[in-house]
Amino acid sequence: MKKAAVAWVNVPGGPALALWCVPLEGALFVVSGPGEQSAPGLADAPEARVTLRGDHGGRIVTWPARVTRVTPGTEAWESAAPLVAAKRLNASGPTTNLVARWAADGCALNRLAPAGAPDSGAGLPEESLAEVPRGAPVVRATRKPFRLHKVRRR
Image (cartoon, rainbow, N blue to C red; front, side):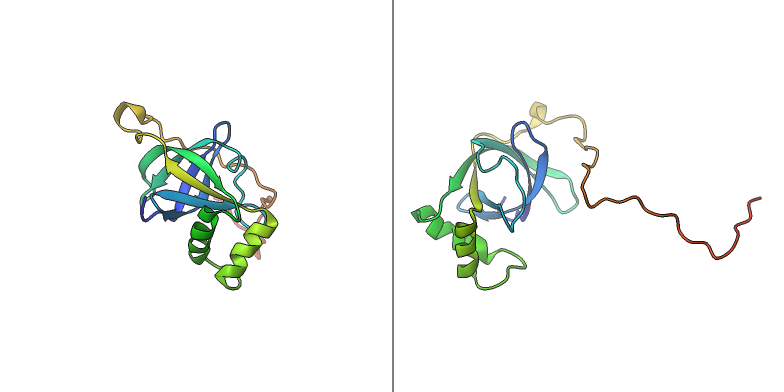
C-alpha cells in the first residue's frame, strides 16, 4: 500500500473505480469532486473495498476499508490536505491554492483505512473479475478508412 498511486475502490452497490490515491499515515487518501476525479457514492459511504494491483496488472491485495471524510477546517484537514495536494500531478498553481479550491468547491477528501484482514485463500474469487467496459459519452463509432485504390479479392 505504501507505493500505491492508483487503487480500485468498490463502494457497495457500485462498480469498482480506478482512483488516484496517496498513501499516508497507514491509509489511502482519495480526492473527488468538481475539477477532480469522479467517485460516485464514496464521500457518503461508511465502507468500501480496495484492490491494489502490481506493476504487471495482477492483484496484490484486496481489503475492506472504513471510509472517513476529512472536512475542511479540522486538524485532520490541516495536516493531510497539503500533503495530498503536494502529490497531485498536473496541479495548476501552488499547493495552498489547490487546498483552498478543494475546500471552496466542496471536494471530498476521503481517508480509506484498513478495517479488517485482507482477502486471502478461500476468500479470493476464482474468476478474473473482468467486466465489459462501461459506455461513455466520448465513445463514437469509427468510420471505415478511405481507400485510394480498389482491393482485389481472390
